[in-house]
Length: 87
Image (cartoon, rainbow, N blue to C red; front, side, top):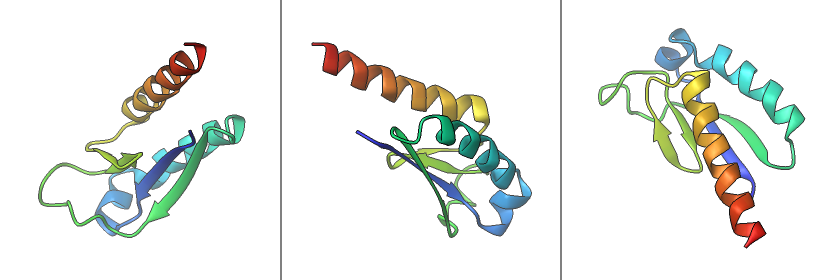
């Protein structure tokens, strides 16, 4: 299963660090290109609901996204996938 990461590239999220976060994630994705894909998307229209920047990992929203939060979700998904394969 490939993990799909969507990064909001809307103005507010970009101002709050989404593009820098995206560059960090792209570096990791290069190392794990078989497991992770990165896509920049237009605004998710969630600006009024939660704090930016917003990232989705396999459709699951992460608000106030930081590299640590996103990497944690990605690593949990990879671990679960590998555990299933071992069984």
